Amino acid sequence: MTTRALGNSGLSVAPLALGGNVFGWTIDEPTSFQVLDAFVAGGFNLIDTADVYSRWKPGNAGGESETIIGKWLKRSGTRARVVIATKVGMEMGPGEKGLSRAHIMRSVERSLNRLQIDTIDLYQAHQDDESTPLEETLGAFSELIAQKKVRAIGASNYSAGRLAAALRVSKERGLPRYECLQPGYNLYDRSGFEAELEPLCLSERVGVIPYYSLAAGFLTGKYRSAEDLSKSARGAKVKNYLTDRGFRILAALDRVAGRLHSTPGKVALAWLLARPSITAPTASATSVEQLKDLLAATALELDPPSVLELTDASA
Image (cartoon, rainbow, N blue to C red; front, side):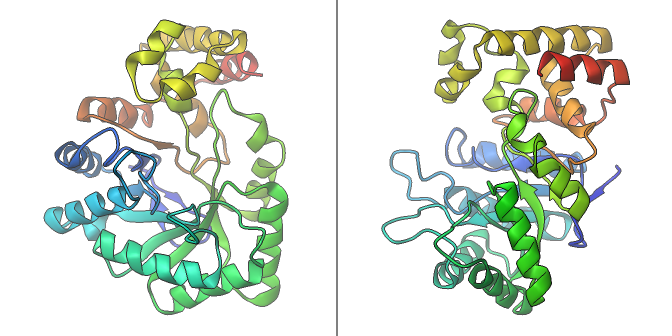
């Protein structure tokens, strides 16, 4: 399988990242293990999680996803074959959030312990923290890289202005730079990334591993009416996509999928992969069968007319 460079980090990843947000939330530990096993068996290697996953579930405290991945790594013996990405910055409790040096240093130890590893391959700032100087945040990451607790760093949910500022600080101060960006981006949610972030990432050779690649499942075609929203825990998020534009996008996905003997979900991921800026879309799976469909999308190459049809339909 062809791998893609993640910025200038030296990390090479297969063209799909497995989202770990569902581990300990909508699927239990045994099912999570099955999905992880199948993901690596399929030749893929980038596993994306965060310390906050899945704190939002009643009874959870955060760290559940990292803990499950750590147990799986120990059991499976696959550490050398995978790229582990996690994040820091979302609220984990009173006074436990942000990108200060103190919080990053506390959080990295907790993540390393839960993941049962010595080094995090990709440590990402989960969201911007304008109350902390960029120099302080990047300096803390520099310490962790020097200590070999982190290999490379990335940013998630940054605006173009703040990402550009962070890249400038890294260059001027000789600090590690954000090698990748994780924005929300898919065939429906386009403007936030394409207007300013995409050209910046292309010009600065910053990798892009978007989340919500399937718009919380909407682009699979599973949700086509208000009655369908009860099909999963993500129904409330999908509600916003049930618009005239959303149905226009689904119709285009259906047409292209029909011509290619494929599925709307595969086509939506293939559209992302056809963009030069995208390194690896991030997608979650709650079963091995669902995962197989996602992995198959990476082998689907869209012809230029199909790409144009989807791009026009989602304009």
